[in-house]
Length: 416
Image (tube, rainbow, N blue to C red; front, side, top):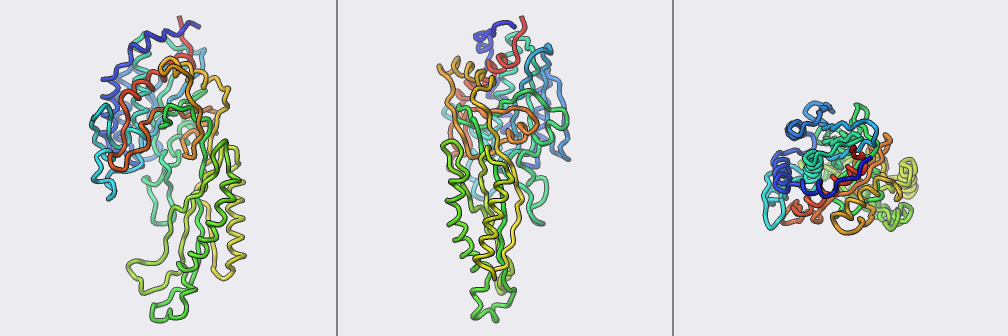
């Protein structure tokens, strides 16, 4: 295997080309469930680069699009994986006036602004630029190199009869489909926004519902029965849940991160008919589960909580369900993939990448279950600004594309 021509590769990273691709992706609206146009754009980009294209129809209007550069056949295969769907549409009332949360890119003070640039269209553009630089440098890879642009990663899911449809089918919908239909590689780099740190592990999630019940009666006949109101009952139940949360935080500790539980939603009653008491009130919890914990253990913990609540409040008609079980993911510190990233990171930044662990979810969860060892490593300007929206520094994109190109050459190997 030949030595990697590092400087020749880095010289071919084209900032203008990278910015152009990134902005073209941001300019295409692609909220979860509406990824088709974005998929067409990715196919066009892959064909322009001379890559083989595979189109996976996850469901109507929702593709995975894979660009493949075949190697000579005797090297490690590497996948770059990135989701096409965005967390929002930009039409949400609290986001309409924020330019950086709109699918319309602009450049200001060395940054690209626009919906999805950070999570994670900027990474997709970096993958494309890394491959373009390798091709322009005349590099011949030994292992296959894939870019997988997938649908439905964002943390959202269907629930009940009201929240159904493609726009609610996230949580690795595309990346679960990907490896069962030919989209596999030996290892994967996932360019989620990590502040240029290598994420050694990330949490998974369990979403659960806890409900209280009460009589459904007219206001005129509710006098003296306030304590039976399911919303009033939920107040006590919620206090009990909050008392329980610290025990989960300690039980779910991973590395230097404690577990966390978010009270994410509460629903009860009928706003259009408040002349009736609510027959049921629902409390929704997001329990973050460390990658070292089996999801069955987390489910048992949730079940134990519900049983304790029933014993404490026997007349409250408590019911429950679990409707998301998305495990976390981790990679060992001495994995060769990390060494390859460190090589590229050192070349670009002057030293190895810092390590991190996070409580957010990524498609690494699905990929590792199919034997594709995955690491999260990408750029970021920080969390999206509440006043400016999503943004990424152009220099950060250029630097990370450079690292990706060098890491790909190292992982796949270079022919003479």
